Length: 151
Image (tube, rainbow, N blue to C red; front, side, top):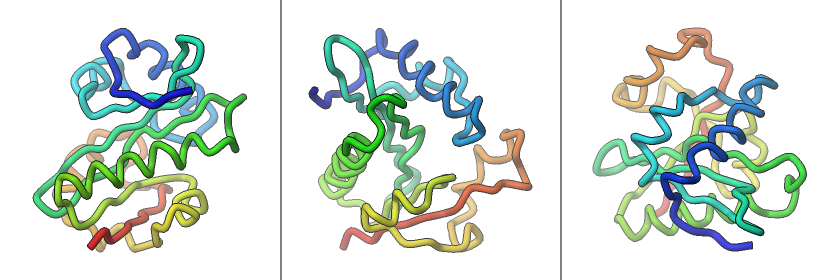
């Protein structure tokens, strides 16, 4: 197993991972076009030439980034791959000199184990919501907001 930057050829496997959890109502679906457009933000965990975990770090402003689309293949859950990706994103955020990273999630307990704390979604800056208005869950979103301070 190793972690690496995603490639265009990974999009179908990333889409399959996300779609699996979206179908179960555990995360939001992502269109392939969104994945292609954001591929440079993605990291994947690979084994035997197969993507088994993926996620992205999206910079929103000079002081804030978001971890998005974090998914681990069901047969690899509870093996530390989600935490591996989160730690990689936090290291990248530190390298970029970003003081805070947040996530909108249906799994706040996982992020709490990674050092994040729950916050009210309303405490996030308005620029966070620019993509939310296109979501079928908006404005009745049931995701929790979590944040970590890196300074």
